[in-house]
Image 1: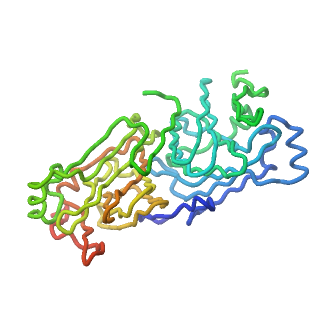
Image 2: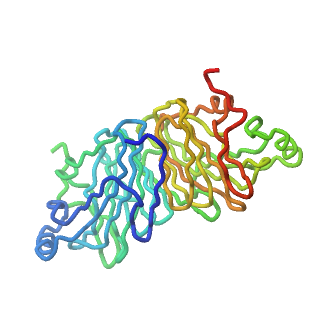
Image 3: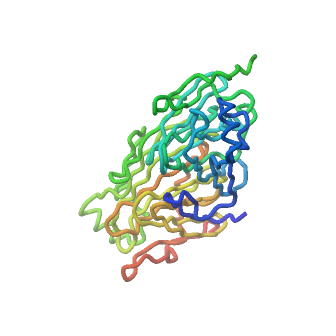
Length: 194
Length: 194
């Protein structure tokens, strides 16, 4: 681990980092159970195991005081009427936030707290999103043809809790209705206390 | 303090945030002792108390897990042959880093550790700079006419130690020589152990 300062470029057009240590690719097959319309999911997967999103990370020690950062690229598309999206997660250390800077595309962040608050914020180029501590977050690409590209920064000790969302889902979904994005209640969502 | 997620735009052209809680303006008169050529500094201050740099901040609780963020704008200019620059500081909690994303202009970050390592990294639009924990940092505008605009993120508990740099300076200065930026030893720098 080098401990000297370093720089790297973000190529917005190609949606790539000039330098990165880790490249995560999430395909449809890794999203079993995440989409509401399970029949549409099965039909689509039978046809093609599409690439839904990618994350480029710069590795740093996972301790408080460090800042983990990287690029998130969500490709355009839908499963049924639900847009391509990331799995979404809480941080393992719940009291840690995240900053997003949107570089390209048209999207939204779907968020919620364990206490039941929820929020959907727009992502557009040139806009910063602050995700406060305690908020689970999922990026959704609502654009027709373009990648949603965001640069993210979060505390080194945050960690990822994917399990809670995988099991219970988000309270809200972002779907296309009459050609426009709409926030709806997740019909499959179950309160964690049940 | 709202604890819901929120977004705000960065207008790169006007170098402003759509929303901010605090606006710091540093003029020449607040930089006594910082520039190497003290006669040039006195002559320049007698003429005009120029605005050297501005910082726009979004307020958040100053605790680990939160991410303080904002916009830094260093105006173009020189004092003698030394470029307009920020005061520069260590974080009070030394083991905290910072991430910069350059939006506009042409600049450099001058950095050093208490152990004596130093580094100067270029800032150009579309580039990310990672300042690891332990590194004091100062933004320098090396452009002729344009603002140097960067978006920064650092851990909520970092704090600012301006005193060390105010008293001892940085080991290295960035000056213009034959129309080009050059890193030189700071003739006034004194080892902290002396």
